[in-house]
Amino acid sequence: MADVTWLTPDQQADWVRLAAVLELLPAALDAQLNRDAELTHFEYFVLAMLSEAPDRTLRQTALASRTNATLARLSRVVSRLETAGFVERRPCPADRRATNAVLTDAGWAKVVATAPGHVGTVRHYVVDALSAQDLAQLGAICGRLLGRLDPDGRMFVSG
Image 1 (cartoon, one colour):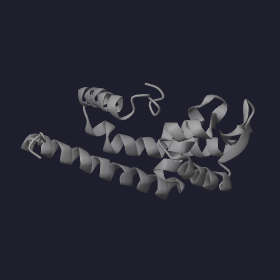
Image 2 (cartoon, one colour):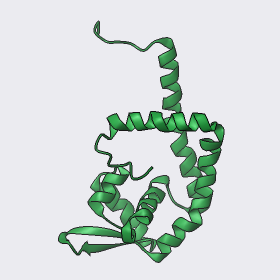
Image 3 (tube, rainbow, N blue to C red):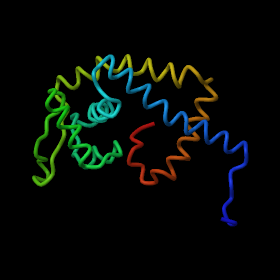
Image 4 (cartoon, one colour):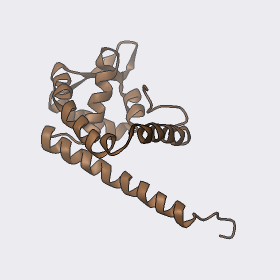
C-alpha cells in the first residue's frame, strides 16, 4: 500500500461528487421515462440509437456495442421492445448468421413522442444547471474520460 498515490482531500471531494452524479442521474432519467413513456433509460437509449442509424437498422452486435450492453442484456431488452411493437428482429441480408434490430414505425413514433420529455429532463438536471462555458468544459472532460474508458469510440456516435 506504500506505493498507492492516495487522493488529496480536494480530489476525494470531487470524486465523491462525480460518483453521486453517476448514481443519481440515471435514476432521475429512469423516473421521468418510466412515468411519461413506460420505458427505462436503457430501453429509450436502444430506441434512440436505432432511430439515428441508417434505415433505423443495426446489427444486434453493433447495437450492443453502441449501448455498452452484453448481447444477453440487449437480447432481453429487444425482446421487450419487440413485444411492445417498437422493434423487429430480422436476418441480416449481408450475413444470414447475424440478426438486425429494426426500429418499427411505432418505435419511431415512440421516440418522437418521448424525446421532448427526455430532453426536458436532461436540460433540467444537466444543461440548464451549467453555463455555456461549463458545458463546453464538461464536454471536453467527458471526451478525455471516454478516451480512456472507450478508446475504440464504440459509444461515441456523433458530436
